[in-house]
Image 1 (tube, rainbow, N blue to C red):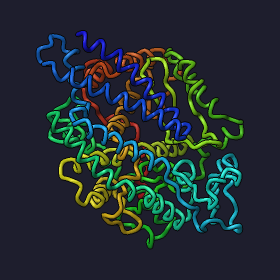
Image 2 (image 1 turned 135 degrees about the vertical axis):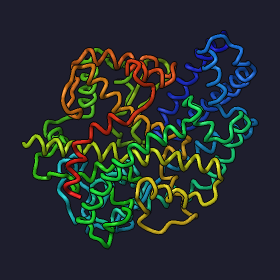
Image 3 (image 1 turned 180 degrees about the vertical axis):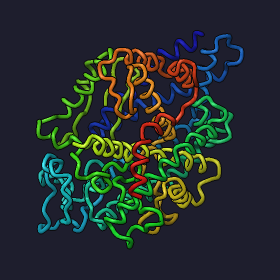
Image 4 (image 1 turned 180 degrees about the horizontal axis):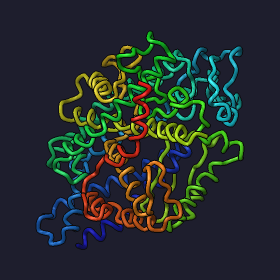
Length: 536
């Protein structure tokens, strides 16, 4: 079909130009780069609207080619171009404004405002990382060197990354954790709430005009599964028991550290104690929950620092792993264009991300048993702990699209309690907007894909292990230098989004199933579950 061929070529070029402008902005936040980015977004919006009108004029059911029908439906269904011109521009402007508010949020240091010379400065990154496992009861003054703070004489320039995230990960002072948790939300939610409510209205209007029940229904259409919501719920229900066991074990250790006045032994966990702004990744509290703390530390950070590892070297080692499987090395554009460390002389967005520039070239971004248990615990704190959060974000978002914005903050915490078993450490109200502290919520990025990706990660891992000839415990598999594993990985990655996920899963499993399954994840952590039962 001529239209689809032209669209593919033109959309790729448009995507490249927009992504370049966005990349320049987030890696150097200036008014000039912001204007350039907005100019490109305006051009892209006009192209999107024109393409949507052309695609909507076709009757997809009459196309003889199933692939062409699928592509045409995706052009129509994924767009909000059905909105009138003014509202189409408005929703994009709202999303841009919400991103900027999020990216520029700053808070003051803990315990002093603006500056207390009696509290020591935060150690340098290297000193801090070298001593990150030494717990301290002494608060630090978290700010960058004075010469970098001429624009912020009050030193209230702590951003989510790295300063606030570092405190949540490494401080064990409950009052400090509470301070940064609460103050960051005060600098984001209230400023975002009204914009988000208007965004919900416009997103729903676009979805209904395009033929969907609401914007959540439109988001789910991308998964090409009429029963997607039920299917995702079934997968979650299979992994929920794993999370509950991990939760029970971690809660017991937190009670030991902070006492029952802070953490009830039979209740939910206050959200600020889990090492992460959203309680989604608990790996940073490994020092508090390690099953065998006397065994050698499985975290290699200190040794990497001792050997002088740099971010560049870490990326090179990662590349070596993939090339050992027979995959292609990353293109030169990756090394030339990526921002591997945060620059000190300009404002940037440091949320970790990998960028596809749409041109197919540019992609930027001593007891063995006891050691195994510590390794599995570390993995569970990162992966299993993440699953309820990754699942509930869009459960909440879809409910807002379906039922309206009333009591949306209360509904957020109801779902946090239901799925994660966590509660806010201080009272919350509808004047707060705590979902706004999560970038993906305010930037119009669906989130359930991360839940599915985590499940699929283990499913792919097990099949690569099978291809490599591994036998034994799944968590001990290493397919480094296995060309057979590399061939399978290449085979399932090569189609990209040109095929539905179900077809790719069927290829990977050699026809045994076309569904995402958590069985591999369960097998991987089964040994850990048996061990932690002894501690609960």
